[in-house]
Image (cartoon, rainbow, N blue to C red; front, side, top):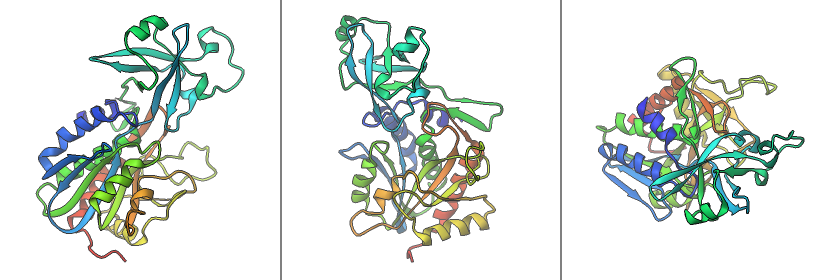
Length: 339
């Protein structure tokens, strides 16, 4: 799983996706005809061929932090990029990229740093990055507001080689799935766009601009969903290890029923387990893809992840591989007319 772990460990906070984009570009080039980067930073890879113009989208960016201010004592005040849970970040190692090296620090709060009891849940503005340097030393290194702060790479396997964990599973898993589908369908004469979007975590921005350029006949956003198999929910609908998840509704869109039926049919024919989700929370790139120009029939296929939107998500390789197989089979003979 060298490729998957490389994708998870690569840095790519929203608005700073160059490292992960370069990695994806290098890997996908042998399997497509055209690779381009648009002005916003989306990577659009086109496999030329016949049939419907299909767009598969996965976002490259991950949640993270940005330097907001440097205090007189040298501690760095941060601002969040995307939705993060502050309590999860305390005690984590993070870094700021400066020139050709990384400046590491530990995320803390005043109370934690001074070994005082934490009496209230911290907010993002309570978080501090402690690099061990003084304010003057930081300024001399060129650290300033606006610098991106990324989490230290931490991809690993857990109790067995089928369970992987790490940062940025949202949505490097989707990126991995697209890369593997491109590899599998390399020799087929199909008209497919593999789009790796930017700034999904802060507003689905990359999906909007890239879809305008591609102008697809239909699309599938490939993302991750929250597994709710720990017992915190009143009922379980998304279990890790029981297959990918087809999202039929979320907080901002209702997926195209025709495409959903195609996917369900392919899953049944190939005996691939498929879970169904109807949700009132969250959304994906599909919400913006669907509203492009005259409208694009769209749906969402995801992989269930535990600890979603934390720095240490957990996923099952079987779900990932089943999603790859499902999409590959779907696109071997993509339908032209969407009902």
